[in-house]
Length: 457
Image (cartoon, rainbow, N blue to C red; front, side, top):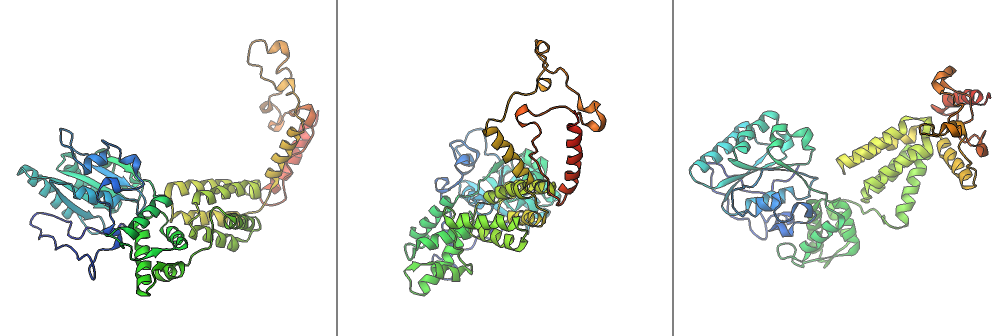
């Protein structure tokens, strides 16, 4: 859930005035993530695809007037990617009322009150209303329906934020009246820039403490692309360092402050390859517990989940193959889930795949078969395609005897036509040797019968 960072932002008819500004130091001081919130769209990082001149976000935050009013938007993106920041910037645009509702606490009555208040304000010649709805996917259908008149008639300009796929969680009428804008996850370098800005900026830590390079890397792993999480951890670590009289925030201090051990892991060095190797070998060896341990190490170290998913897809065919025909399906589904969901929830999908693959019967028969066939091709054992298998659908093919003598398999007993399929150079070679494990046990018996039929010529 996105944090409520707009103290006093809710403005409804007859509401009391907002509280005085929070102190800049001492008790009641806003969190570092709030103090470092961008003051303009130019300070927003990681969303360049949405910030070009004339874009809906530019027009929402930097209105230029004219007959085309800003469009309501649904902001879809992972936590800490800037959805709340964009809403805050929209609230600071001059000449507008800004109203915030949280889908966690607001009901239909609250929604209707805001919409009615916005309508009356416009009718009285007052300013337009920007309505920010956080966690809009938590709104029920009736609550979302209550938004429709305001959006339809532009009594309000809606800015709705969600971490869930809006096609599943937001009603179609509301989506059709709004622009869906997808925010990209922040990259490691995006978050690094925000952390360094917070260290130096007077709104942030103002140079009160330095961050050791190793601590910076640990902080970025903790953040996992979430800017708010990174700044929250930085504030906790910096507070601990200052309390201890340390001018530099190091890894041990940061570990104690955030209660998160630093995983020694270099995503481009030996540890990356060693852990990945041990991970796959544990799956191959059917040690599900060791495999889950190495998965946890990679996840905690901030390894790209797509890399993990790719390794699992390879393992499904290399080490399991047709001993469990569902293994590849599960691995591919896991890789698709990683793309759809993202971290941290995708760790659950990865764990499911790891457990399935580790406990599946093992076979490398398909892997050995294709490599054996490739080895023969590289030796030059290819040769021409047998004439009866060649394409016969073009003019003149019959004069070349292409297709002559071909036996249609569906007309043969058991659907197996006895004839030569392989070129002469490799005719009779057996590449695929199924094991006696899992589903390959039945394939082994069937393959023996099929080969006997094929070679009865």
